[in-house]
Image (cartoon, rainbow over all chains, first blue to last red; front, side, top):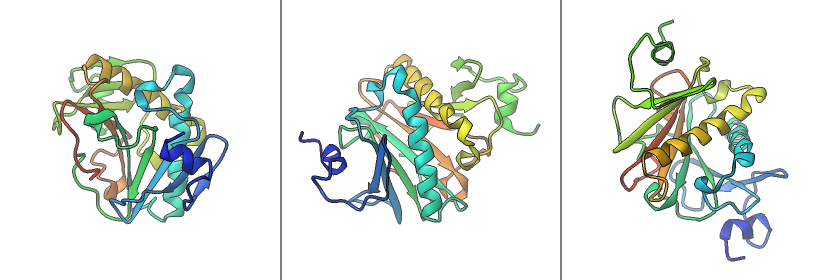
Length: 112
Length: 112
């Protein structure tokens, strides 16, 4: 198990866990791109968006719902925020374990 | 009904519809930010992410699944792509009707 997100989820690497349930975990990005930059990560090791099966379709809905809750907790719900999922090399995915970026706390710029 | 996405969904404004089912519609962004830039939009007028109810949680999973299918159709599945949802003014949301951006066809840059 050399996946860094699996090691964080398993408690092997310490992180500031902001949320956890039986499906996902959330913690701050270690290289933040905005004042609020949180990752929502499924506990199950799913490599990327393209690897999600039809039965896993609800997972992204749940990740989104968790992100909304974290946006509220971080006080950025009203001003606004951005959710990003990168997939594969051209998408800019750096860690090969599916994750959703929640970004807020400043006016977001280009889509990338 | 002065919402531009509702008017596209209703056929009142012509667009190049790439996908449609009983929940969502997809068409190219008129101001593309990448060679592939497609919007996946729910037919129902939901203003933004913060307005999604718990019962609408599966909708984002479905929008993601449709985006994956469109990424495959556009030939960017393997190289990679990015999904973005902007919410509210600081998130960069320009049209007040929930939509998911699918971006690909070049290496994506910053998260914004």
